[in-house]
Image (cartoon, rainbow, N blue to C red; front, top):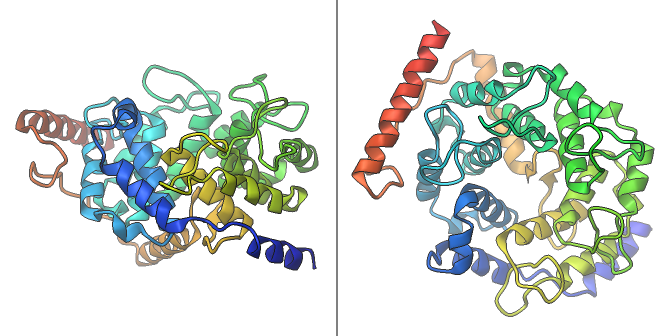
Length: 373
């Protein structure tokens, strides 16, 4: 009865501006002269994930040039096996996960050497089970999530020490049931998602103090219907994902007012030019557009198909991926290492830049083969 009343209320509210959001994502993705495009250079690969995943949830992934996107992602890989946020940028755990997610969205995981990617990921695990974000050593539970999610998507959880990773994440739990970026760190909704997601992927969701954490999470809902990341903070559309995904994994999503949250998300839409902002009246961006749409998916409204709350990927993509991995395992067939991109196939516009990249990739492959022998 409650769900029926909720859906009736939804029908009378403003709708998701699907066509406008599609146009917005495509426009900002191609406007290379814009200020926003220039200042987001360092995280371009994550931006591709946000935009592509949003389009997939809107049923519009075909609007992107798949070959061009896959070429760009593969061109961001470094010799170490990890991926940088853009061409020529240093490898980092955050962008390595984004790369794997984008390739999975386009059914192109076979175009990279999964073992090589995982050697990079495993190299960043510390003796206490934590993961660094890159070679410079910053440790954060975000990177623990990225490592576990990468390994899961690639079907290679055995390549990292999952038990140690889980122990570290559990050590970041606080008295209020929440989680911080490190042991003793302040509880934050974004870190809660990464920790609960990591524990779910690692098979240890049962270790979460669900009642205490769910209470802390549902208290993130503000009078305006939106969710915040910490006490006494303003609501922000992105927490529609960070909070609600964790609550869905804990099976406590009914503890918040879904109708009010939906109204908040839709109030942040730009109904003229498309896109979703962090708050009503602010300018939209791809980050909040994706997480707003993902939040509606978790709510089960507006015709947005289901999303996997642990992997932040469309459920249909995860089902296809698991089916392919099961088939490969049953046949016992190893995947042959993919060939490197040629200059024409790559996203590089300078032959010199491409030659440097290709030499680094070849050196990395030779090093990896030497390690195996």
